[in-house]
Image 1 (tube, rainbow, N blue to C red):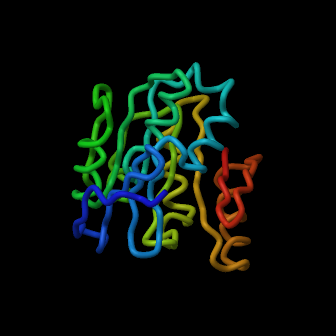
Image 2: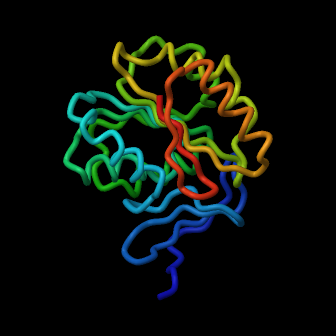
Length: 200
């Protein structure tokens, strides 16, 4: 079975964006990366499975890097219906996410850089999902103590942070673990091959 091209465009940040229909799920792709995979997006599936006992208490979720809303789809598919805030710096990606999600009630789309959003944010979230990429690379700012501290400060009292990271360099990965552990001691890691998901 081959993917069917539904939409092609140039984003404000990402070039060569495509929406594909593959095996009855929507995928958001660039020339060399898959940003979203419907309700089969592995990082979202792993997080939801790992936090299954925590999710009933989650009232709101902050998603940094919206894709096509895979985290929304996976959480809802598992029977949970919190409020979502989708933060995405590419207006085309965010527009497509809101267009293709089947139900946009209780979803607040915010087109802004995640750094700017967090620096000014005063709301508290029960779950934060960091899923920010430029192609297959996590931008450097995401793995700084400052950015991760803003995430920590945006958590509710018992809130959790989940961070999808793709390994391109072994030494960079070691540095990321050190920085994340400095801000979120006692975290654990889900191994998805070259993708690792860190959970506070």
